[in-house]
Image 1 (cartoon, rainbow, N blue to C red):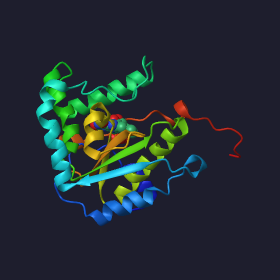
Image 2 (image 1 turned 120 degrees about the vertical axis):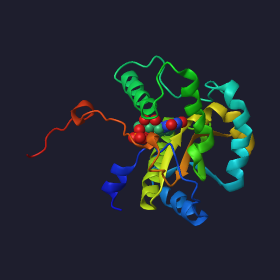
Image 3 (image 1 turned 180 degrees about the vertical axis):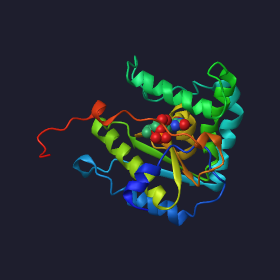
Image 4 (image 1 turned 90 degrees about the horizontal axis):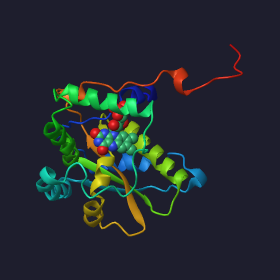
Length: 226
Ligand SMILES: Cc1cc2nc3c(=O)[nH]c(=O)nc-3n(C[C@H](O)[C@H](O)[C@H](O)COP(=O)(O)O)c2cc1C
């Protein structure tokens, strides 16, 4: 797969097949993704990959809590969205939510159904592999950005292996449980989870794509010879 196809075909996959992914493949992705650029070459990412019994054990811890603890969970360890969130960001976030729930026939007013879908995050959407991306608590904005670049590199490399991904900040809402489960040292915190596996092409939730702003809305170009 060339880089253009990898970028174009990446999307947040929210239904995976149970087909296992060999450890060798996961190691390859995690290792190669460390070619992502990082300010000062700090390489500030820490990756925890889990599969098989470990995934099942984590899911089993969360499952009985879903009915009563969503959407707040344990409260996020860091603020994920700007508050207040002005336009165009609010509108973009709203639109993607509408598209997601429309694709599975859930009306906005049906909160229980929306929470049931949201709870699928804590099943890794059925993915056989999960990554947790952790960071040093004391690191700053540049290191957050580096980990974002690492995450995107994982997503693109996954495409190279015929795999799909879904980044999952939803796991930050259960940061205490994840910390205990991974035995995360005090100086680290979870930045995001990421589900990894083969997409279920028949799942309606995988059948839509998020819109993007037009080029001129976010970029300017000056001084080029035409
Ligand atoms: C750091 C990060 C965390 C995310 N967390 C979640 C999540 O917890 N659950 C989810 O369903 N999607 C999550 N997403 C996916 C975004 O909703 C998605 O990237 C966005 O709507 C654009 O859609 P696309 O990835 O399909 O192009 C996350 C994306 C990023 C980059």
